[in-house]
Length: 507
Image (cartoon, rainbow, N blue to C red; front, side):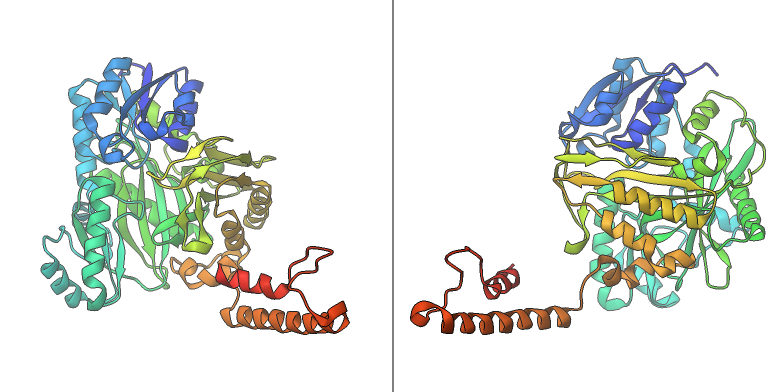
């Protein structure tokens, strides 16, 4: 295959910049695409060329295949890297690239068909003897059929988008009373995120760990795994903190899961970077969950412990080169990644779009910040609110936690609200420090991690403040000329704590 000369990155934000950086190191020219909301975005400034592809909503810009292809043709790009999300797992887009004579830096359409659609992937894995979580092997057509199947396997169950991942289109359902709203919202979110509203059902496992295996395959039949990532720190099925090695895996279990992941990739003639995801139960039994046929958000932690550039590997495999190694490398040290979001944890994680008025990014030894923002940048409200991925490396897990905490303490973002304090609380929590946390960890510890006070204690403090203010004002009234107490001291302008307490309560 010929060497790639120019890559269009069909994405935005930090992942677009991350791909462009590797391309430039390899001497490859880069092309950005952008929506109206991203005219001044950093990925646009980073690329050698940039093309406008439509209005802010992704379904009118980043998800419109023909506009992406037209931009590639206009720029003279001979390859497209999809990043993650958007068109990264869309087999029809891969075929459209092939028809246009453009190299798609990712798996072939056939492998994506086999594994990118979640129910088909489950069926394929069952055929080759890979253990899977109980559930349907086809999307469910109607709500009535879904209800019937849910009753058959028993609650709780998970409704999951068949055509995508990343926590989108997923709903846990505890019983029939929750089913209608969960069904509607899962299908709606799946359609908006992936252009496909198909959903399927899985049995919900109690207190599982979410562990994924990074696999890589070339066009010469070589398939390897690059060890695992622990992804159990999730909020609403969206990963928040990832690490490698997993604190719960033994070398034996790592080898077993890696062998199964390689088997899964070989079964569909996979090429490029992919991730085989598993749930590990309390007895350390593991079950195939899905395969993400793309680069993962959390790939930096694997790069830290292996010393590999996974984007460079993707490009070289797309050019027809063989993998530089033929077996899993031994993990070197420990790496942790946290996702920094423009959101307000104290307001139920409501997105916090707006202008960044000040930004100080952490640095120091073995600290990496993959970001798509800068001082003066306005975070739009049309896309996922993640603004950066902060990752660190250290010789041991305890040292990695300490380094991540230190880095977060240096991270300053003003003008918008972020989840940085929340991330620090996660890393300091005893469950996380001990390393035996499951996918329900963040939900169970919601109040503790936000540092929310007990409402009863807050009410008592408010009443105590009011009583103190009343007593002080009464004393002042007895000593002031004329015997009148003011709500504020006229000479100092200070406001009574009573009024302060009432103001805070009204807010």
